[in-house]
Image 1: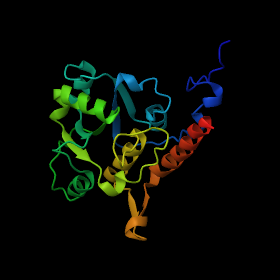
Image 2: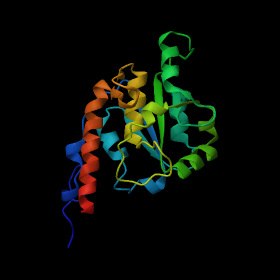
Image 3: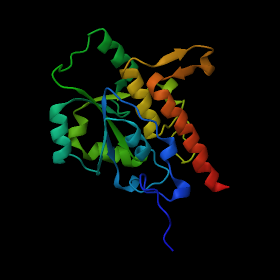
Image 4: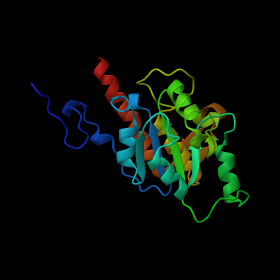
Length: 215
């Protein structure tokens, strides 16, 4: 017997994620490069992210070197790749330099943030195979943000791992200059991401929702 599916998210009605969507008009466009193994991953966060952000596109693949769609997008944007490579610079320092006009960007091209969606091993493979990604400005989140992850529903190979949704929200908040740090104590620092905080709050509920199926 066929299961009833939600017409919007195409998931079984009891597993519908529509209530966790929070629409945000993001100023900086987001492009998610998704590994094929993540497309049907029910615990993945990209579908929730894409339906929440007004400017968010997803391209599926592994080696993007000769991907015409991606290369056309890169030609039209000033692009940042959120990936912790050896060359990556702290995105908070990058944003600070950007504010002070110490960082020269092509002002005629809009800013684009690229995220790699996959396990650490698969993201690394995507990065190493895709020569065009290696030429981009690479940025990473500082440890104090990376440690704020609430991704409880999937096992990860590294400590302080964030979901694609969390990493994107933090990165956008930094670049939008809308990340607020309330120093209550060094280990109890409260981070608020203004326009992205409601989506992060929804994501926390999404985690609990997914965990409920394990009971």
